[in-house]
Image 1: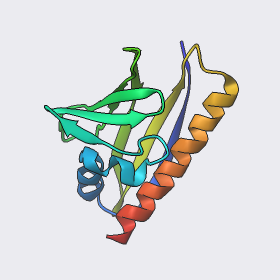
Image 2 (image 1 turned 120 degrees about the horizontal axis):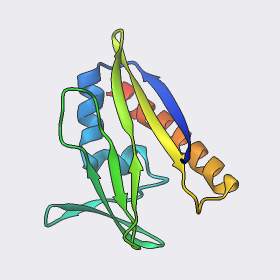
Image 3 (image 1 turned 90 degrees about the vertical axis):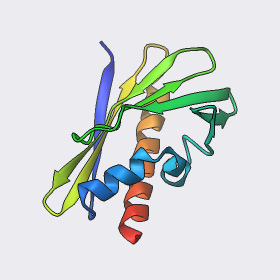
Length: 131
């Protein structure tokens, strides 16, 4: 079993607005630029260029439950699962991301990943609350 930590942030926008923004993968570099600096769609696949090579990204199918799980396929073929949820929080929303520590990940790398997700969620909050 992998170690995990869930990070959440409250956003002063309704669930539908937050869900629509996150579900549009073109927005990914706008709020998660430290992990996903650029993205492009080629033949129905979403691709991200990284120093390690090109990663594929896909989301769960659209749903009414606020589930926006990300699946990132690394150049090695390994798929990284990133659970992401958007839930109603009164007039706003709560966005939750679970980060897993894989077996090959050092504690230092895991802590850095947690910090990066926290930065990305704060960027998401800023972007969504501005429009």
